[in-house]
Length: 110
Image 1 (tube, rainbow, N blue to C red):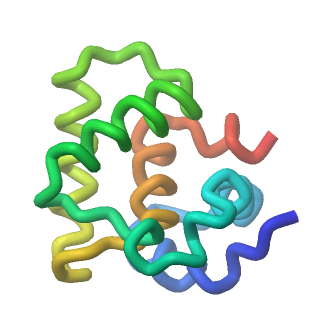
Image 2: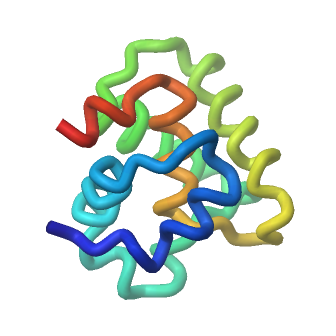
């Protein structure tokens, strides 16, 4: 089981609750990417990166069928919510908030 404790406080700052099992699944999914500072963060100013978040996380891992515009709006909402974090946002927190937005935390935790 992946250890999500390093991300718990940051997630709790922005999420409406905290689902440890879902956070652990996200950490496990990201795996080795979290060892590199650059790949452990999401840059909301990088359109290519946000496209990858939409296609690989939202469509791929979460299995969402919403329109591109709907997914992009949710991604923008998470960028706005995480604005206090500055230029780079924790990828774990970012993915957690997207899963929460679409009601998929339980899907990840199972």
